Image (cartoon, rainbow over all chains, first blue to last red; front, side, top):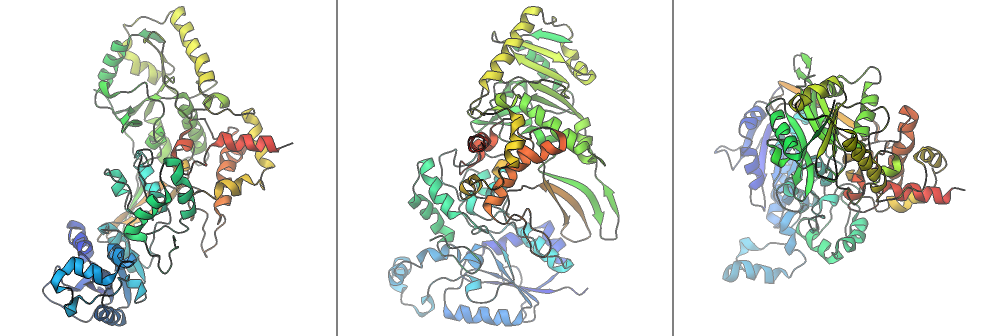
Length: 252
Length: 344
């Protein structure tokens, strides 16, 4: 089989998810035996317009970016949204409900009116073009991308965890963050990270988006039993899940 | 062989065991307890109330390799286990292990489970500290009664000394290091009886209002009871109740390739009937689509289906599900008592 050509593209983000691909190290070499990267600004000098699979990182904040993304979509046979900014809009969406002028002035000061900073609301990749597959997380777990590419190459249906982070947390025999007096989004968030945050001293921030059939109503009801309020829950959801999107449940 | 030993003698014996095959025993973890590889006897917490996960993880690991394969079609079964000691199992957890023994031994037998099980030496420990959710007493599982399969048993007496009893050849070998200790006399054996009598009463933090044998009958008539909807409405489908359950053993099997697709492994992982996709089949049909249907299934599984299969209630009263459920809907005693109340 001829190796599929891969293009890796970045939009508004910290590019940390691409870095997770570089960080695959030995596993990256295995992956490179299967695919041929032709566009990858973070790791390659050369570039090309001919690719089969587009891996897109970041959220879309300007119209010119949306236009570039549509071109990538035209070209790609398969488009993969990589990481929370691409799949959910990510932390970039925190500013969406705020006054845009105020936000821009707070961040860029006297440069606020520079034309290249003329950004609109942050959008996920799926809000602009059709997304075929998603690799969730902030940042992604590189092994999940490897598995997705393997599944595409071997003709298997890619497997997405349909259960919440609690499952992986229990498998690791962690003490529940609620028992430690914290609000944790583990019960509402799609698994796949191996419960990384709860295993390393933090609650779950929800960076992988809501799980299928997330029981937000239960979460609201349960807060009081832990001496917490619905506002505590909403605060935490604001980070990655303040706006629902295509294919995801709405929490408010 | 029944010995009466002091706490320091017990610790010295445990230290001597650490020179042999791995010993897994209860230890502290963030204010809770977990079975883990024991490195020194000082870390051993025989006063633990309940561990986060049950000791089933040593026979049915969270993830295990069943087969290794290559792209060319080669494969080899991965049935491997080194001898180990599982030290400090509470009686209710032993009952659960023995239930799994019966289930995994059913023809054709699960070689992966059984190989690990045969490699193990089981040391039971009578409960010293009752947890806030223990209800094993109401199920008759607070102490080791009847014909159970284990190798040795420890009981802490009120004066702080221990009675150690070997039940099998493996148990006697394990207790070689106690050969010089005095045999337990009638007084210490009577004190041990007292501990058992106390535990049968004390491990009733939630009170079952019926004899356990009644549960299968109650369930048979409760398919349409409103409790499934009421409780299920708050279910996160996170499966915490099944994952921490000592008698739950459902698993998923999948193939994982190594990055270059040259070879891979067939792995088995824990699964659970509370997950939304557990009963999903090819073609997109899901036999238990609603939270209520999944919630109900779990209680039928615990209280009826396993009973129909091996004649035992698949609930031993450890209370882990009650504590693990973030939504606080997983108390089996509450469910079965409610069915009892509503059944004429």
